[in-house]
Image 1 (cartoon, each protein chain N blue to C red):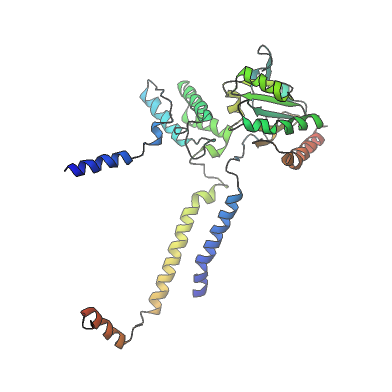
Image 2: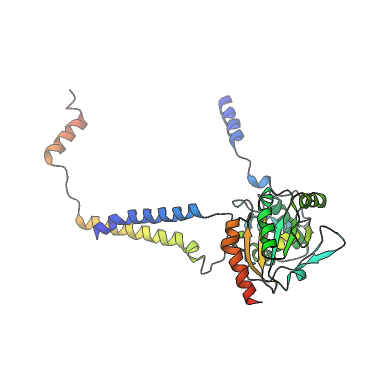
Length: 179
Length: 157
């Protein structure tokens, strides 16, 4: 019994160490979104390309699709731009953009410079649609099923590895669900 | 006297400016009750960008937007519970400095008390055992005599 008691602090210490070790590997910026498995938040925004035109959540239904929140001032958006464009083109995924807290001219210049892979872009100048989508940092990418339900969210720039490992398998599964 | 004042002044210089004097926008509600609710809400909600700051402290763009949202909802007569719900629906329990008690947060809430109970238990156990073992003289008479002489300074050479 006494010996066990001696082991107790050591065990507790090891346990604490284990927790800390696991904690080191966690990314505190990844906050689980309560929006996953819920219908995409309702919104209507003026289109970036044409302020007279309105775009919104109703356009997102019918097919498995991607929604990407980006801005011209966001440097990690630039980093993922190529990955995102390839993903949309090669796998025939409709990609919609929410241009978050940006100036129209800046955003259009960005698209002119890096290419425009988006079907449309909603111009969310005040960031209100962003709040409804639970955006806390650009870029953020959502995968929607054919019913317009959010099935996956990724905060931060997309990497080819993440696309391969998580997004493509999910897209394949979602397409099977609703051919 | 002079010295005391100088010290006091130096101490004042060293005092940190509280963070809450910085972040919050200089908006005022005409109604002091509304103003109080606004402040309370902001201190209960966490900024998701700069994670160790509340909405009241943070100067991040998102925090500013969320403050605007809270202000507008307060003006529109929305209850505190509704506003909190609104935030949680978008950003999850993470935005709450006091997450609700649920299966997932059970350990979070009870953990400190569990650890306290564990520590108290261990303390009691050790105390009981050492009492049962009794106090054994570990110093023999000769050593005791030497210690006494040392203390009284007789041994000083």
